[in-house]
Each structure stands twice: as structure tokens, then as C-alpha cells.
Length: 453
View 1 (cartoon, rainbow, N blue to C red):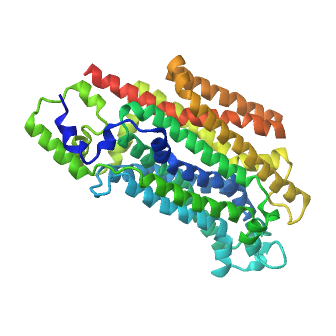
View 2: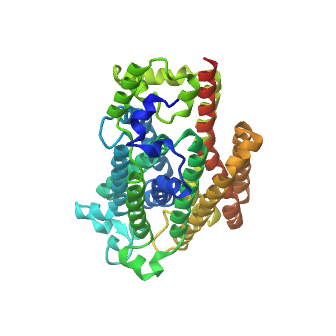
């Protein structure tokens, strides 16, 4: 017997109830490719840009901390607004587009912040570089004296960094949720693996392009150098990839779900049993959201929901938090680490000096290390499903993080070019592990809870 709640929706939204092809999975995941391409530009070059603008490591760390703090408070609010959105085009796609606009703004502000600062009143003589102006290359926009820093350019660049980092992080959640909601439960594991693979491809392309010296190529030199060319490419790829994803499948509007839910309840209140609940991709979403609509977003309740978790969830959340702290430390400071510790360069060196040239060479070589991380991420995402089936999610989770930990210790001890390339692959294993397994564990945990009830 057919679920009456689903029967109301299958005529208009048949794609919700069928398995997706590989091509359709790739299309749903394309937005992640663009987001990760943008994120790779940030990861590789924002730290060097901030250092070149005169910020020391302490101040740069404070800038990096702003976005996660904002995300902690704003992300759940955006999630609540998305859950309750009654727009006819759906609940996830409008937020993907909204956050993508913030990403584009960040991608423009970061490489062109110094240029805009000069237009708004900063003194171009505050920058070292060629005897023309900073418009030749962001890499030449280096502050000679912290006491005469071009404040407007620094502020715009920091604002761009915050926009880029915040939106790149937060936009992944509605993108992932959108894919999960338009796919059947049988496709969820395959969908998460596809997302991770596309994220890896996006990161690999971004880092690989960052490893090329575009100043020696006519088009790169015409646009303004390495950094400006890479960020421009990231902007174009982001716009195209997000467009491909948000035009792939229609979402079921919340109003229609509620009407279908109400009609089904009127026809037969006892129709749906627990097994059918677990099999339907959209069942009871309307009921859940309706029950939440009576309560406004409450920060106190949000904090309580984090503190008063069950013991298994506390362990998983704590492990996840510590693992992400470690991974982000690697990602955000890696090119700077290669430039300073492996190549022996100095980002505060004089323009044209050996130490500054060595630092810039190290940053570009660090991009190839990050490209290896992204490539490993894509490859590992293809086999992680097999590993989970064979060894279970818990063992794969612990094993992946253990391999990454050993790799990072070896990287710090060796500090060589070959270790930069080879050991960066362990970060790809860590990212794939963190991007997939915690969500599968939570899903299994809550499914078992429902069955026990």
C-alpha cells in the first residue's frame, strides 16, 4: 500500500522518490567544487596576503578567529530560517545563493583590498614594489612599515577574509542538506562520497593553479599577477558551479509538504508505521518544522542542546571539534609554514630580497602540497564506503585520524620538499573522514533510537 503523504507529492516531484544517476549526483555536488575552489584560494594565499600587508602572526590569528565565532552564533540562526522558509523555490537553494553572494564579495575584496584602499585615500607610497603602483600585483603590495600601514586597504582585505571564510564554511551545510533532501536514503552514503570527491577536485584545481607562477604568463600578468588571477578564476568557477547545482532539482516547498501531511493525516491517521517513516526522504519534515514554528530561535536552548548531549554524542562532538581544530591549523598556515620553515623565507623581507623571494617560492610550492591533499581527498572518497562496510565506521574514523596525526608529526620533523608533497596526502584522508563519517554515525545513532522506541 502506498504512503498517502508521498502520493500527493509524487506527481509533481517524482525525482525525490527515485535513485539518482551518477551524472545527477555529480550535478548536485558541483556547488561544492566551486566552494572548495574558492576555499583553496583562501587557504593558500590569505595568510601570506595578511602577512605581506603588515599583520604579524598574532593579529592574523585573531582575524582567522572572527569567522568561526560569527559562525557559532549565526549558523544555527540561518539553519533555523532555512528550515522554516516558505519560499516557493524551496528552503535550501535560496540560502545557497545568498551565501554564494557573500563568497563572491570575499573573493573580490581579498585580492583587490589594497587597490581599493588606494582609491579611497591610502597612500600608494606606503607600499613597496615596482616604481609604478600596487596595481601590478598584490604580491608587490607589501607594507614597508607597520606604523604607516594603509589602513583602508587592510580593513577591506580583513573584511573580505571574514566574508570568504564565513560563507565558505556555512554554505556547505545547506548544499549538503539540499542533496540529502532530494535523494532517497539509499543514495545518502553515495551522495556524501560524491560531495567529498567533488570537494577534493575543486581543491586540487585551485591549489594546482595557485602553484603556477602566473606572472610569467601573459594572461596572468595582464590580470595582475598570481593572486588576482587565481581569485578571479575562483569567482567564475563558483558562479558556474552554484548555478549548475541550484538548477538541478526542484525542492518541495514547506507549504506543500504541510498540506500533504495534513491531508494524509485526515485520510488515515494510523497509516504510516515506523518502517515507512525511515524509508521516505521527506516524510515528517513538515511535522517537525511545524512543531518548531511556535518557538523562536533561542540561543539559550541552543547552548543547552550542545551541553546536555547524550554521552555517545558528547564523545563524537568532542572528537570532531579537536580534529577540525587540528585540520584547520594545517590548512590555514600550511603555505606560510612551507615558505618560512621549509624554504627559510621571510614574509616581512624587503622587496626583491632573497628571503622574500624564497618565501614566495615556498608559498607556491606549498600550493602543490595542498593539491596533493585535495587529490588524496578525492581518491580516498572513492574507497571510504568500501572501508566502512568492511571495517565499520568507528574503525575507519579512528584509523583515518591516526594516519593524519602521524603524517603531521613527520612533516614537522622532516621539513623537506618531498615530505610536503607526500605527507600532505594524510590531510586528505583526514578531511574525507571528517566530511563523511560523523554524519553517518549520527544518522545510525538516531535511526537506532527511533527503532528502539
